[in-house]
Length: 303
Image 1 (cartoon, rainbow, N blue to C red):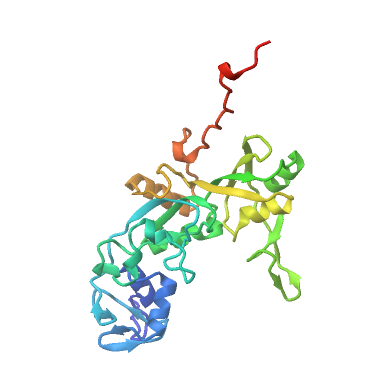
Image 2 (image 1 turned 30 degrees about the vertical axis):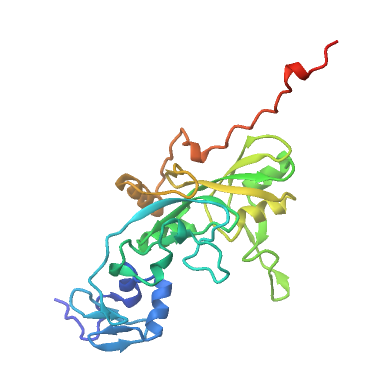
């Protein structure tokens, strides 16, 4: 039988333990550790590689002992335009936390809060709207966010002008876009990357048509950059699908996911194929265009 070395690492990394307890995301938990706010068995710990076992070690954050992992929760939010997908915004703009009634969450965290500390899975920019996942399950969030899993994300996109069939074919095959922020220049040249093939279908015609676009990656402002590359400005973006999930709550509303939906997300995160609903709810469809107002027959000139 193999003898266990005395210095063999045991337990989990502290940042993972803090994230599972709902104190903060893993990245934020790393800063909490570096700031000297964590104690393990009475000793302040500031090294990120430190491991611990919550079942045997006494772990405290800001003097409060952890009581173990909190229950994992999963929510679908319909983010309206004009909200930022962050927990706090230095510019004072409304955040996604306002919709969940958790603006004061940064003061009351983890097991000490009425609601679990939730984090967004991916982002929607300030002007975009639609389906956003919120959870305290850091492991699932990380797996869903990795491009290698190929989780499908579906959007309704309104563009200015009429793209040609050839231009749309370019988007389907992949186009070169700027990596990172728009027009960012690195080392004296533009840093460019080829997008993965996308599904693009027109769902409404007109001078400013709408398209349904499905991506398997989520680069910074990707949809806007893709259409800019073919010469068309994006006017509106609404995410209506994430894996097997379909947006089914009105703007500004949210609901908790069912057990079956969570299982479907785990399947998608594992790279397995999942199917979404064929019939879309109202929140995931375009409103019918308002017909032009007809003049009152009594005001028409008679011949």
